[in-house]
Length: 432
Figure 1 (cartoon, one colour):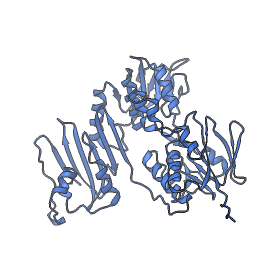
Figure 2 (cartoon, rainbow, N blue to C red; figure 1 turned 120 degrees about the vertical axis):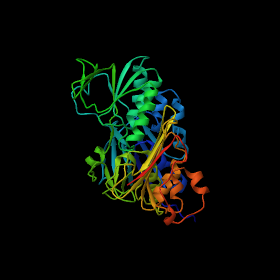
Figure 3 (tube, rainbow, N blue to C red; figure 1 turned 90 degrees about the vertical axis):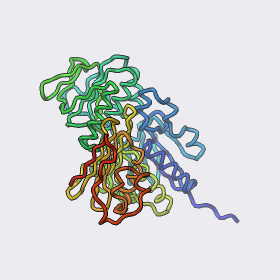
Figure 4 (cartoon, rainbow, N blue to C red; figure 1 turned 180 degrees about the vertical axis):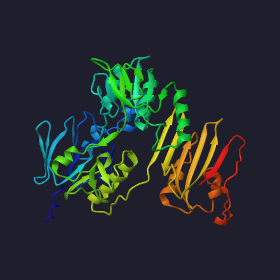
């Protein structure tokens, strides 16, 4: 007599973004038959690559290029996929979820992968017609319909999101002005020198940049006609894009009774405050950090998949890195780019070639880097930062890149001296 297989657990995944898809792929890879999986996404299409939204807006890639998995993939792997229908409420005691359509789904385990929402400035006029956000495929499609060549567009926000929006809009012929409240672009990821080079690269693309402009209102009677600033100046615009940041989409979990701070609080196994509930990606807060980038979301998804499959799975946090290309100029940053107390920095700048490199050391460890113009060694530097590897044997050569550093004979830390300029057009510095 055949021994019956134990019943499969029911797993509900709320959200179908990049973290969700990576989790599902990992579950298929580790233990495909462990769960009956239902995936619910509020957007009308299956999960797609949000990183490519600016390229889609710029018409450099197609809609099909950004799709992660088509509906057939879910069906082939025995998953039930629900699109265009948001989860309205979750009952932690009854282990069921109610959808906006009225349908109900029961589960044994529930994963929140609800992502984030765009943050809108709390200023007068921000809800006027003609003000858009840049966060999802619907936003990109709306922009594509609204933007015509030569149309004046103001993008509020000089971080990654704003720069990507400005780039995409400029590529399709819009007259774009990027407005930022701080004194430099990407102030969390770049120091002043690197930010200045990025500003020049953006300007070369035809995008105007206004720094230290605090937006106080969106002007216009019935629709947006521009922006007003704290210094009394104004900017005329036919369309306003608010790209000032994101916030974890955690209200559904909060309403269900899960512990929420900025995001849904999770432990190293990505477990929430109620057993059987989990969170990954931009909606999760781990050790006080709500990550807003893809790489940690993927790492969390992989760790949770292992944990759900009964294998050792843990997420211990991650040193963040930023990687983008503007007007053909690569920009990479990781770790402590400003230099905390007790650290030292080494700088190389070749202005004629548009190359800038900054490394930050804490003793014999690399703890931060900024690369502009040449970023091929970015991932190698990132590995040195994350591993905490002793770099004393090649520290004096590290600023010149991986190929040069690894080709040099090892030296003792006593032999290490500040780097000297080896290229006449370069400026090198090492300072406390």
